[in-house]
Image 1 (cartoon, rainbow, N blue to C red):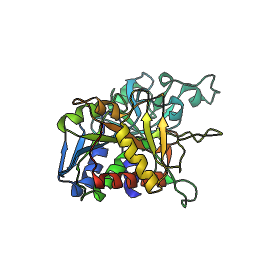
Image 2 (image 1 turned 135 degrees about the vertical axis):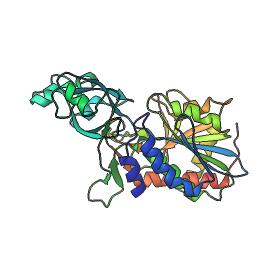
Image 3 (image 1 turned 60 degrees about the horizontal axis):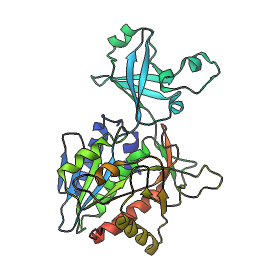
Image 4 (image 1 turned 45 degrees about the vertical axis):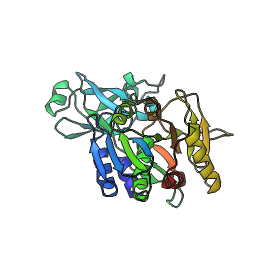
Length: 342
């Protein structure tokens, strides 16, 4: 999965998706009829067709941190980008990227960790700082570090275990897996009757902003958002959302109820083709589907993805077979290009 590896390892925190967008642009361009970046930074690819207009969306951005202030002793305080668990940042290697593009090596730590002391409480984001090996604010400024620099977390995409299994681990699976799925679908759906828009959105992690702006340039009959969800398989008796048990179909989250019509299509395909699927009803979180569904007079919409472990951390775990099954379901669905029912 060389493409997913490149997407996972690329830097792309919210508001800084350029590197990810360029990988996607080069990969998808040979397979679509039209390709453009809108004024907000969303990448939109179009395959022309005479059937219904379908929007497929995945967000390019990831969670992370940004330099908040330069301290007098050479430390860099940080601000969180998106909903991440601060404890997962401890000890992480980062590249602080200056405005000139220079990468400065650093380590995220706390005063107690630095001094080898026992933690009396779990650290908050305010307790964390980046150590770049300098001892004054003046030294930081001299090498080009400034407030607003992104601190990009460095992780390698690898298979778990001895490499023969189906589990993989890497950074930013939420939602580079969704981006990967859309690219693979674009390669397979050239003969679909549908008018398909592959939309790669920005700034999902800090407020679903890209989805809200992207839809103004297209007019879909319905939409399917590809996004990841947390796994439940750490529980003694998990009831759903387990790795290797199939894609997750979101029926409800904290902010929306998805389209019954599209959900029934997906469930029927999974039954007919013996593809495992995990319906999910949740009281927490939401996705780009929320802003898509309430735009332009209303767009029927659902959410399909895979469960991942460690979703709000610097590294996650997913199952290759779950990803392949999402691609298989959507290829079957969109090759037929059904018309939406209300």
